[in-house]
Length: 215
Image 1 (tube, rainbow, N blue to C red):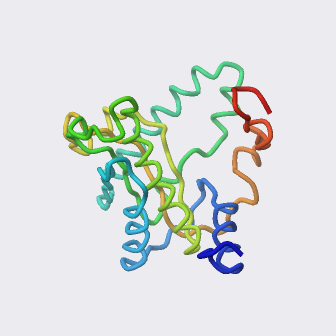
Image 2: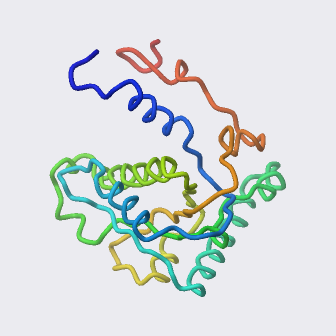
């Protein structure tokens, strides 16, 4: 065994939660206890991040009217997206793309204002703030799955419209609407695979050696 490795049981749990994480769209209502929600958000807060800038802000949506307004923004973008999908429009409109009204907790993940001050690790790759926020969201996702809760990342919205709705500073940016809560069951495979929208590609097609396209 490699020194300082976790035990076999612990390693199996880590790989299992990665393997069984799903982007959930179907929720069963219910609630998320405050202590549990705190653990999940703390897991997100422990994500790796460039220059220790911690570029994540989470907004917990508790107002029912505000939740409905967010749902309407997503619905508007869903229909706009359908219009540019051509022959797949009808198939797309049959997909369930969010669980905003049904989930127990609704969060919005955003990049903060003042990000231009952080140069460490971002001088040539300014998008590393977004990559860091994505790591936080992934931490939250995996922790939720380990706790038996589902989570879905909704990206069908106009960031400016959502920012205005949530009164974000002008240089902050909404990145994700996160649906979180109990589910009746987790999908056996990614929902888009189960619905026939897409197929997964094997790792062997995405792994190169030394140069692009060389396997």
